[in-house]
Amino acid sequence: MLPLLAGFFVMGFGDIIGTVMNQVKAECAADATRISYLMPIFAYVWFLLISIPTGVLSGRIGRKNAVLVSLAVTVLAMTVPLFANAERWYLYVAAFALIGIGNTIIQAALPALMSNIVEPSQLASRISLGQFVKAVCAALTPVFVYLTATALGNWKLLFPLYGVLTVGAAIWLWITKIPDERNSPSEGSSSKGTSTTFGGCFAMLKEPYVAAMTVGILFSVGADVGFSVAIPEYLKNVFKVNVDLAGMGPTVYFVAKTVAAFAGAIVFARISAAKCFPWCMGLGLAATAAIPFVSTPFAFLSVVAFVALLTANSFGMCMALAIGRFPNKANEISSLMVMAIVGGGLVSAVLGFAQASFGPVGIVATLGGCLAYLFALGLFASGRRDRAK
Image 1: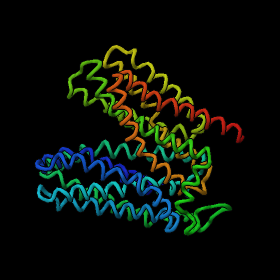
Image 2: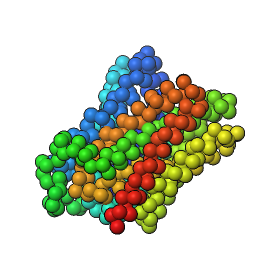
Image 3: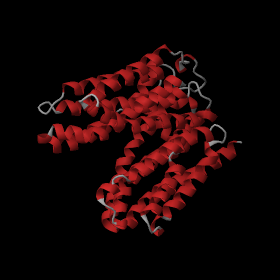
Image 4: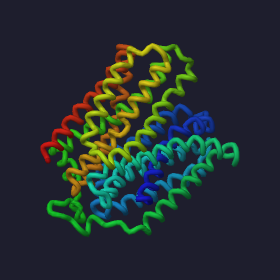
């Protein structure tokens, strides 16, 4: 498990984009506007474009090798910014595009690889543990940016630091013996050689369980992005909190998410994720519905933290339950679900429209809609589990 958890730490490097955006724009002031548009697009469009090809790649070369490819791309990404400057600002864009590519591949391949060594009943627990490690990396990135800028005199030294860490993770995984799913395909498996195809990936959507869980990923990521965007807006518009102070609001949400990921690793090792799913989402939905009735910023942030504690593991639960039901289709399922991450952008667009049209009520309604689907999905998953018995 340890080299796989190191892979989850590298997965957290994807959050470097938002963290260093201000430094890049300050260095390339003449092209700051262009960079602010291009960087997010080139970083996240890959979830839509290469998630399914990653499933095909994993089927051909093996899940472990696919993860090693992602780590190689990440090392290259950490090298490019060292040659960037105000005149060559496009190298920053290229670097973040490579970070996005590497991050997409590892998010699609690593959970599938984890299923090679973890029993289906324990997969949700292990994915939650991986998400905790990823969250720790995301939390440490601003600290590393500050330390390299102050102690070493150049914030860009963060990139070779992360490059070295990625090389270490790659070597660790490379020398670790992990069963190759291609060598022991069971009946009906799609893991054999070249049998993972584009058509095979999309064909999994014909399975109602997989389709429902894939849409669940869309709403899970959408709710996550939605809360991070909505919290400062709600604090400013409803409680008239200072803009700078309101900007710190999402920290409460992300700290609670990190705690929840660690707790999920412990809880799901003992209690089925399918059994926990409807309770977590139902209570999270009820707490979200209570937001309009809180009267102070402290009460609002307390409710937000409670929601994060309950719903933070929805991504891992959706992926683990789907892979656990169809373990021989892990490549296809992981690819579909990572592609659904683009749902975060769709929900953000809906959230912006709802806020402009209906104000704070629109924010709560949009987030509540995401959690309502996840609650219904939890009931569906729990019911299917009972019938399976």
